[in-house]
Image (cartoon, rainbow, N blue to C red; front, side):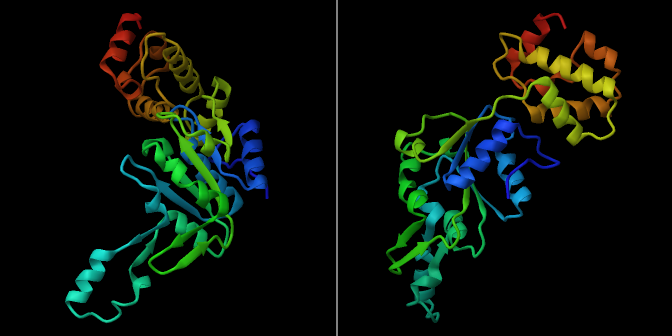
Amino acid sequence: MAFTGTKQYVASDDLMNTVNIAVTLQKPLLVKGEPGTGKTMLAQAVAEALGKQLIIWNVKSTTKAQDGLYVYDVVQRLYDSQFGNHGVDEIARYIKLGKLGEAFRSEEQVVLLIDEIDKADLEFPNDLLWELDQMEFYIPETQETVRARQRPIVIITSNAEKELPDAFLRRCVFHYIEFPDQAQMEQIIHVHFGDLEERLIRQALAAFYWLRQLPDIEKKPSTSELVDWLRALAAGGVDPDRIVREIPFAGVLLKKDKDLRTLAQSGR
């Protein structure tokens, strides 16, 4: 099956082709793009479109590669031994697979999302090279090798907060999701709003893209903020003509004092 987007996810032809190439080559797909371009939602859309389970590994600053493989709960084993619980010698009882381990153990092919990989330290991607290449890892406590029963479809997202190692990049298919143009954004908006007044959508989109083009805006509003803003405009009963003169509820779009001052100085 080929990925062609979903009703809830509007994907460009280039993005759809890149997803299908990564699946065919059995390589991880590394997706970059500014916040709000749908990187995380892409994995959800691929899983939905291909009818596969989605496993999400949310990476944090404290995340280690080992966390995704397995965890050996030595504290629980020690606790059980002190209270004479049966089965303490069965180390396998205290091995809990991480998200990568779950994906490998699945009887059916899954979609594995490694979300925001650049949040972890610089060694994190390098520490996953063998596992992502060979689709296996070794558990020394049980002397067991966990091999992927079905090679997962791996989608990795990055906000480009850190440069990723070259050795890691060589193993990935790469795609940068460009911010949607106004025509594509209108399609996205219609996915979220089925009954919103067309004139309100047009005026809001014009104001949104005008705002993003202001040269001194530090944090440009994203798609999710546009959706929230449209909800606020609809809930507040804002007349579309008012948006031509001013930006109502600007705090929904802009999240920095400096950006709000920039808007105020623009005369709108």
